[in-house]
Length: 115
Image (cartoon, rainbow, N blue to C red; front, top):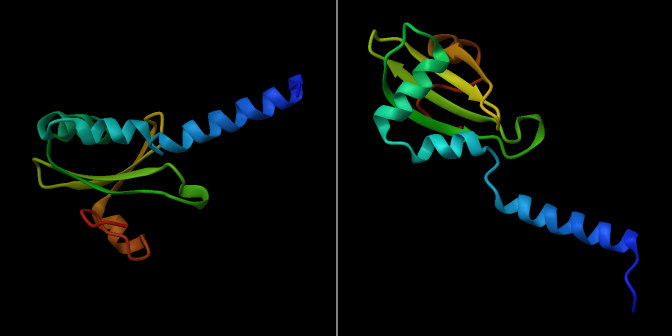
């Protein structure tokens, strides 16, 4: 049996999809998880802004379905007593929100707790 070009393309796409399924949904977040705490805290604090010196971090979860698929959620506590939730997409772009605002408007979501 001879395989035509179209069949080969479908097969290659299937292999790529299978390989992609084995990769983490958010490689940026996976890299954060492997860092020592001081380095991870510094990296997350930098996403918050220059005023934050990170002291504690917590991976709240990564979206598994729907529009949140692949979005990682982290908490970081700052030396000045502030704390923030950070949403990070797979290539490292982020959005930050104060933990007090998340608790008030986050429909039950809170910093430093698994989603």
